[in-house]
Length: 578
Image 1 (cartoon, helix red, strand yellow):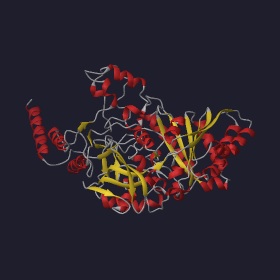
Image 2 (cartoon, rainbow, N blue to C red):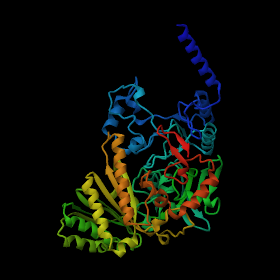
Image 3 (cartoon, helix red, strand yellow):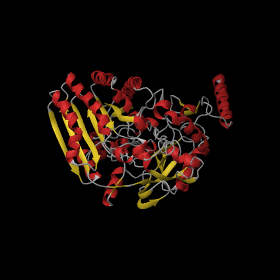
Image 4 (tube, rainbow, N blue to C red):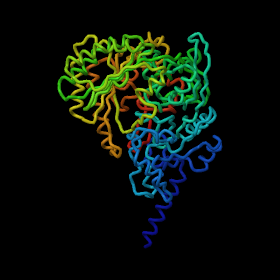
């Protein structure tokens, strides 16, 4: 009894001494970010002080499905989530949630008995707190707090983030989604004179496009209406149906209002902090500065010809011969000023689901597509749908082929590859591409492959390599291949990890077929080995110097992002310097 009491006293004394030492929790690696459970993690008084500093705009991170848990669950909301867990919309207005299931690991889902213990709803790697950003001061306060407390800092807009940059273990999120100001103006500078629009960081395309249409204008936007017009889409380059007419998303940017990692507000443009402006437009999202607003080009609206064509997958050689015929048709089609296209192929169907040609007539669209029609006819393939029409405006065109009420799913894994124009024009390797795509289908039936045909050249955009950091392979590409596998709502993380590995394998196959090209960072995989070459290319070294200049301590981190290899994420989610 005496011995046991003595041992207990010694243990208690030792613990007291350790508690008094200003040392990290035993086992915490040196050079790592602080996470919950660490001795240095801020206590409630510190978070409360931050909340007062930002005017009560600090929000505790809460998973979307938390309404199903705890002593006071919301039965109606929980039931709605169970019925639509795969729908994107639930995650857009949550300050910490991200769209792709891979990044929340299903640590908190709605498929539980109502009122399950709150402890079963784990925040996982989502941000622990978020600041509902209202201005530069709230951003600067978040930056200062994260720096002083050694906490990981992330930026979240809508959460359409396949790379996981909007989340991180123990992070503080700067939530820019509610910066919704929109101002149309006549812009004049030595680089551009014409209609423009200044948009807050949280503006979405579904909001912007309607307002532009009402003023007789259109803006370059993405294919998904809920994507932020000023977040990762633009900062990663930004593609969509109007690329062949006006250039990519980052080609539209005239100036930006940002807060850098030192807490300073900067108004950047091609003539002011030009290097940072260059990097923020195409050099990847979440890694350079916090964007508050951008001023972008607007374009005069007008009629747009559109077309669709569908036929069934007959599971034989002639179906894949038709796919190859479309590939070979693309050089001529993409040479038509303004012409863009999107097809998808599935185990069930070939679908030209949207051809876009601003200023063209119905007759011109039909004439342009006739060579492909003839190839399909020669193959004795029965076309199930073939429609061409002219819409009055871009929004009308978009709603005709995508739909204003289209429901977008989050249950997917995506990767891809840019296919150079010369690859198809030379022609000899096109059968190899067709064969590779066919093998992907045969090995994984729950697959859809997209061909997004754009002319994203410097000539179309009216830009040069010095204008912005858009990945140079875009400028020489004929189309972007998107490789998509569809997941089921409650797919375990092990399944999602396996599908990601499959996509990486397929990307390697396409890489071997198209050496020297690359992928689109916003629709690629975060863990591919050749990310520097495939997402940044010849821009990387210049980008690395700019990163060091404006964020020397690497307060902002994304993977794959410039200088991301200077950090490693441990098994518990903790971010540490290499």
